[in-house]
Length: 322
Length: 267
Image (cartoon, rainbow over all chains, first blue to last red; front, top):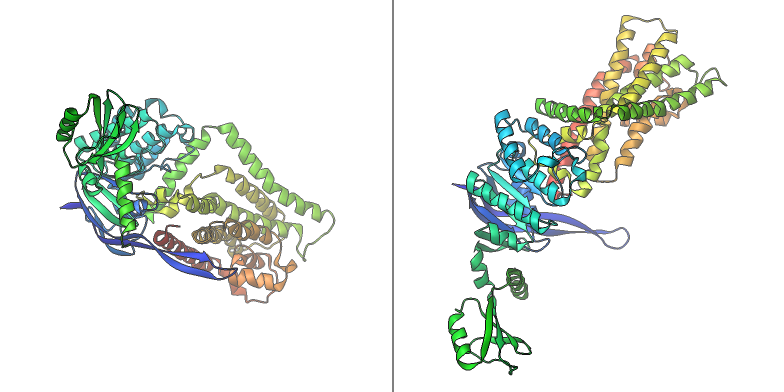
């Protein structure tokens, strides 16, 4: 059975806008507009989209913070908004932008309180804490008040806090936002191991597509509250009609290359940039090039996934707005 | 309910432990809290160096009013004083982090940053009350004696309800902590003086609208054998437990409505 189930879930907010001095106008914002998907136990899914697309609203409904306006939603068979506190025992949540730790207290005190609050058996607590401390490098931070931690340290502390009670699913809302490269790598490595070894279901929203590339086989793209894509990461390229780039170094300066389905993007001295569809093999193109032009060197650049998604958005919003 | 109390206890214990890590700082802030509230009473003492009675009440009688409301309010402030931080939590979104924990949100908000230094106010109120009991010229009966602890308990519950209701209001108006303060701190100051010195409409307001009069005015009229300025029947003095229970019920309801609204609007 699927662990997370959404069927036509909606969230509509009433927004008041001032019109003139006293009159206020009410209008509705459909933050989540009929989303359906399922996530089986143990899967690691990326949930991406631009700001205001409805990612955080979805997470808030999945955790029971917000009550959906319509549709059906179940996590582990539980309706989150009705049985929020019961569900809380089984889920872990990390908000990238705000900590769930107690700001003025050392990490250790926060963990101790979690221990009691979640009624975690002593042995389990000790085992999970030791594991997190080791893998997330927290040993030296345990006695530091949370407000004195750097963003990356705090994030690691938050991830540990979300896992002490052995949650079956972990929601991460922008877990790598603002982190440096090393912290990002550490967090990603930890999440990958967690999913592989413990089978924890992970749903993560992010702006950083590298997170998705390195962690998730499946990705969901949301915009204007609607699910625009749900499938393997590789498939995004086809949907977005993305292009790969061939960088060609010639022996001398030549006029723009004309060959097959490729088009010239840029010419800079003897170096030229050619774009060709990502779905087409590069081999025949390279062969044809080598036959007709004096090649020195060449390299293929994979499409930038951000550009792919941006293109996808542009196409959707240019078309009839759903 | 048991869950809420347990969670409240856990969080409070953690803050107390963390406070006690800096004993000197705790002693200083508690003393400060004590001194700041004590100045109120010094002001009353100064007044009495010029007059013999205030609104027909003698110094021991005023001290009785002062001591009962200050102690009751101090207790409520100690237990629920953190409620005024709710608005900020709603505004900056950190309330969400409380909603994903397996314990009631009200317990978490109330226990947040539990400030043991607020014991300073309770201590000061108790001292003034002790002085009043020592000097009052009252024929004590068992009923009158029992009324004193009952006043503190019910008064504390009434003030606590105002804290909770004020917190609930902050779900809708995030800057409403000020409004709440005018009823809690303002109400406390009001009740330190006898009802006879205020306009009748004000007395009516705090009797029937925001029933702060039941914290100490009504029961004190009975203990001190005073006339009710509104001419209300004697049995009003026995109402504090009923009023306190009613207030707690309404405040709990208001909290639920507020939290439900937050969860449907997210702000």
